[in-house]
Amino acid sequence: MDRIAVFPGSFDPITRGHESIIRRALPLFDKVIVAIGENTEKRSFFTLERRLEWLHQIFGAEPGIFITCYSGLTIDFCRREGARFILRGLRTAADFEFERGIGQMNKLMFPDLETVFLLCVPEYASLSSSIVRDIIRNGGDVRQFVPEGIETGSH
Image (cartoon, rainbow, N blue to C red):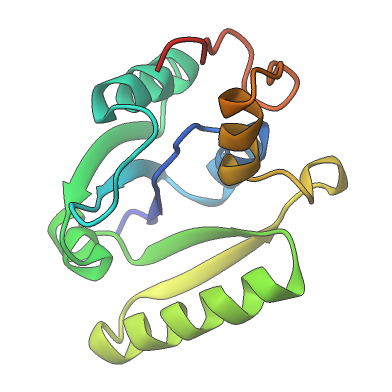
């Protein structure tokens, strides 16, 4: 059985922290599905199409990484994809507390699913998509915070 992991997120925008977690997960899994969760209740800063384009730009040539989007419960998406792992990155103790609760609920609803946490590398510990969006809103330069080649200028 393949070791398939889903790395769900909004990637609004993708950051170097996200990229690091995805690349570091490759040796651990046969397949990593980077999946943009569509939340109709939440207005995204960047369009879904733009975020998918960025993910394909960064990982499109990488064997073992698959890019998609989904709506509904992440556990249902994992079932459809045959994934037995959800991949999450941790920056802080607060991230752990938040992700632990979600992971435990997912485990109750889908007992065969495991949540795997990777610690972020220290240089990305304070980096988040919301901080990057705030810098963009205020006209700042985010090139050091997003993967190389990602243009966030006009959203």
